[in-house]
Length: 306
Image (cartoon, rainbow, N blue to C red):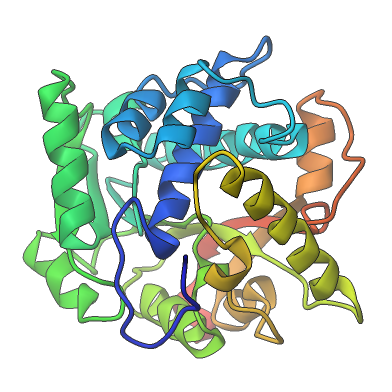
């Protein structure tokens, strides 16, 4: 049984919050196989298979259809989310930014699958066992990075800026940062520290992309928890014992978009609902997980205001 999150807890790619990276890769694998994929992640299913969670492997490889187990809203959400960050990084590096930082990189394979401009350095930050697993697995598959890939194998609760600098990161140069699918798994104060640190390490002209969820109206979080409990129950019936509700931090927090704006970032924002429409996918219907109002934000730092 998945336990409630607590200070100092640990995990791997098959347990606790670490398994969410495997779930995300599983959904990307399904999204890649659809008639209108929008994205192409050829490594997602292979990485899920290597982690070894039976249900997620069967879903990722197509042995088991997603019907009733992975809702269409999640598959379409994975399409637009992945494309949003792919486009963000390619636009940033095409504009001359040479340092990319992927926070909590998990089973993200962008360092291996995107057509990075020459001279791009991709820094991945995650726990040592996660970094080691992905590096070893992709090497065993014969995959090679399409940019210079450097890793900072460190927990984000530890001194990750020092590890990033040791890997060669230069805070005097503009960077492109992503915090994808991360903030909801951090306590509110840890979220603020992370965004503060990104700002401190960013030279003028740096770019950032993340999600910003509006604080809940009365009753909304209970609806979200009920939706997550439903997913967990369906997966438990197929042998994957997880408790999605216990992995998230609920309650009031600083919304990421205004928080970053107050720290000198000029941002653009688009909701999941509008991203889905913009990509000619079916509009959201059932939305127990409150995906519609989740904002995808990206922008540029101008420190002259700080």
